Length: 508
Image: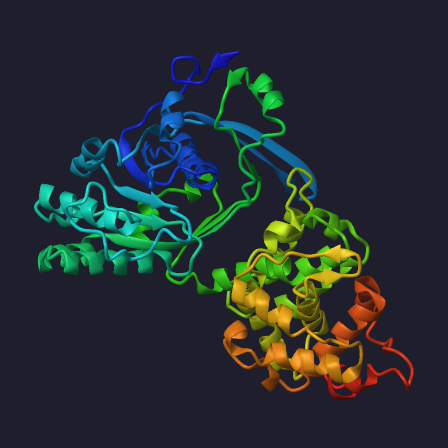
């Protein structure tokens, strides 16, 4: 079997260095580099990528061993059909480790053809590190490195406006480019780089925040032998991704003219405000995940696809999105239902094992940002509580108890969050008073929800009712009650009626 490089791979094309990329991980290679590769091949973008390893340990050496070449294996469901695509990506020319190749790295700033910077340095990458100084080689933080790089370019070209760069951030944080820009300006001021430089940063460079959407499982460790035999190459950088992709780029209109993604038939949207797109993704895709993980794990279901196929959980998830989330995403021109249909196909992808355990990481803060806004919007517009979303909160509270029937659960979250939610279960008794007290204690913790949720009329009673039913009858039977609202929770002597009277009955 041959090694993969530009001598052994037929037709591998090299392009001029026009893109500097901070980050060499699976996501960038399965998403941004794939987009650039498609633009090169289908819209004449003619741009080569130089990859910068953002931390001392990374993959620069392995990328260079393969001359920047690797294969991307896309698999999924489109319009109800199974689709797959195995493509060689040619756009990366070389990779550099600035910790050992600083002079070669910083010299890229002198390249007049350089036009773009793309980054994904993880959520922790865009931070202001006050320990970074102008004379470090390199600075520790990504913003520090970028400030020094841009200052070198500013000096090389005498502050020429036409030598500014288009900086496209892919980090999974809101306003990623805005945060990066503020860090760069803070470094520039602290390092005393001068007013002319800060004005050049402000006016000659475009900092573009983006929303990225593609599930990337990464290196197919369990199938790499079969894939390499199919390729006929020993490719150690194969990366798997789902077929679906969406890239929303918040940028001035002229940026779109320089980044011809639409001409390449790509699902890349340029906008002056990505807020509605972010809300749609966070509430539908991420919200459905976060609202369903505890329900699924308490039922013993391990993956998203298994939950979708489950007759009860699948219906719960589908109705939760269709009836309690989508109707309250109200932005002109932003279609929620069709996006939800795409998400549903993605959840059914037979090639991706998306484990609920990984989704469960830090799920309390995720529930606050991804699910709570849908709950409060539903209540604001209808005057009723969305019972499936309320049920998801009750399931989350039960999950964080740490035990459920024969399951021992280790919640993966901040220690203070886990400790608090376990503490409220201390001395719990399966009766009306104890369950309602537990619900009120959880909802009133503004540190968890950024507000006192006990202020929402009937919410404590509704959550308590669902917690009571989950503990007494089991997650699936409790869910059946939510899915059949005409069925009440028991006879007149059932202590759960305490909650129904104040919560479930009056609020749907």
